[in-house]
Length: 162
Image 1 (cartoon, one colour):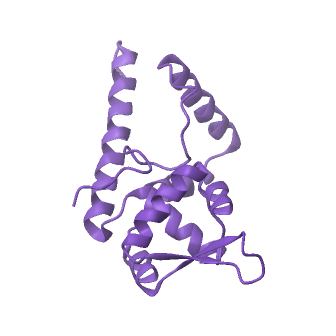
Image 2 (cartoon, one colour):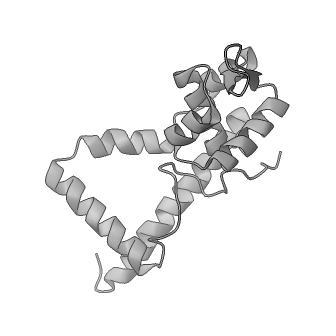
């Protein structure tokens, strides 16, 4: 690291942003979906026959955002919403066969690789990294910005350009 530590930190931040952007573009190229759309599809696959609220909690996005994403997934026949047979007030979401095929083709998520490497670190290093990242977020006036624990530079409900 040079004498201008702040320059090295800003370069590292830019590298993270760039890696995230490249991964998002790769995901779009491979399966035609944004990272949040893939996250929602995975949540539906994992939770099975699931409400918007449960999906929302699972992926740490608002119910409104999840609903917007579901609208787009339904338009592409990747997911389907069905009214419950036991309680007509409840609407559950399921994957379609096309949705399952898309999930199988989707690349590994960038944050999954990060989590794998992070989990291998000793606890003291995890704490140090967390503290440093929180401090950087505060220094960039970003500590109060709502953010899901996924790596994507686009808005969660943005319409992808095809």
